[in-house]
Length: 245
Image (cartoon, rainbow, N blue to C red; front, side):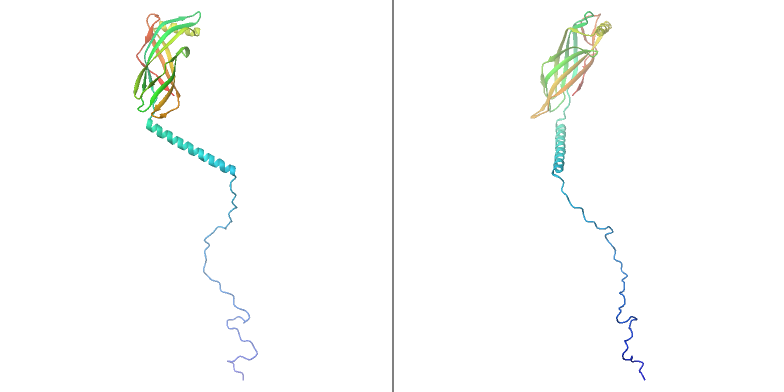
């Protein structure tokens, strides 16, 4: 009899794990999860093309220009903080008018105006040089006469008197202004306007500022008259003038 514990010769051995010998079991899949730390797809960077030389030149030029403006502004700020420049002040102390004559036919005006100004330099470190000075006399925005005044200079914290002599000899004016002047004089006062334009320089040691125009406006200078006299003087005391650059 055949022994059941021994397989029969000539037949293949039975599979040990349920699969035939010529067929291996499929590999077991691992349950461990490997996270993806780069959720974005990788794209190669675009090729680098250097900017054209012309564009590079303009970029550097504008950068240098901006740097120069910044440096210049810082220098101006430092100079202003050190020097603290201030505009001079002008005051009309006195005004006298003599030989006033206004005629209708022809429409002319004659007269002699003498003014005295007090000019103050309030700066502690800046000298002021008045190189060219021009004084003008107006009545109701109409120019009557003008004259050039002698130049002068002022030290720091200085008060200077400046005289201006203006003469009109048979100067033409509108006929409407003739009647207005005569009417104002009959009422006791005539208002004139004086303008002073000066070309000035500011200097402190070796530092000098560029020359600029100083404009002085002295409006509504009331000249009082007695009984239609040809002579008059400033009414209501000294008048402070407006000054600008």
